Image 1 (tube, helix red, strand yellow):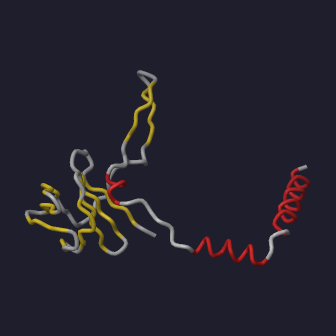
Image 2 (image 1 turned 120 degrees about the vertical axis):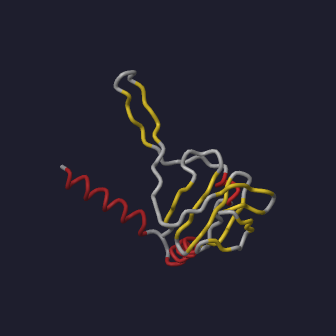
Image 3 (image 1 turned 60 degrees about the vertical axis):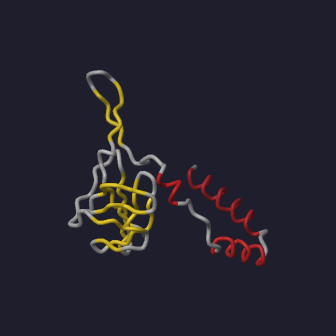
Length: 138
């Protein structure tokens, strides 16, 4: 039965896409290769952490949200203050484009700073228990 349904789906999808012309396919490929506009760093600065874990509390039968643990790494950069377009990092005032411990300051917002070194991005925020987060871009 599964083979029959699978064969029917395959034949129907082949028939549906067979009606596309070469120019339509080329247009679709062009659309895929167009550079898409991403979200601005200011919007990302205000975005809540999307990766959370839900744990069930057996005593109260409720769900508890656990924020992810940060990865430890050798480079420790502390954000002490932000004033205007400058951030006080590791006892030095830095602006966008400045370097600190192998990282370049990419963005300074009202509540945090984004640093980049190669494919690693480090974000430092005020008011969070986990001040440092490390992301690897692919």
